[in-house]
Image (cartoon, rainbow over all chains, first blue to last red; front, side, top):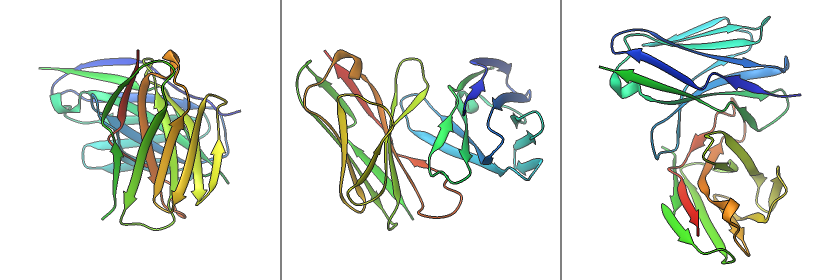
Length: 111
Length: 113
């Protein structure tokens, strides 16, 4: 079956690093995604990683994938107050055109 | 560049009234289209998706329906709204091929009273 789980809440101070974790259950996942949702807005695609990669870095964002443990993480370096939002991870299974989303992690960045 | 539009942005409707939410995509052809609902618990629930005109797949049984009358137009409808239909409705598109990353519209906030 397919299930994506995330912790619901993370609080950090401005300037610190944030690490948002996600676990998934289906080993046939081909792509994994991170989305950001600000209050009252749609989801914004932040980054993605292929299932045959271990790491992807894009400016302040680092995605780590441990396929053996089915664990995905998003690290935000030098977190800013503007990073406060809900972050969703999502997986795409091989042969499917739909994504399965986690329930989202609310990141609160305090000054 | 591609853009996705949704309207209306907000809607307040009484129980039992009909619903029509519209989503249009510009700048791409033959997109996959999706309707999601996000309730108070924040999770995203996939309602419908479409890989072509007139082709609709329903993920969750409910009193909602979807239609795709044109390549880049996706409509979410209901004949009679329930209180439980309240939520934030998001439309998304993805390319016909490739990574299948989805791009979301700004959403419609629906309150059923």
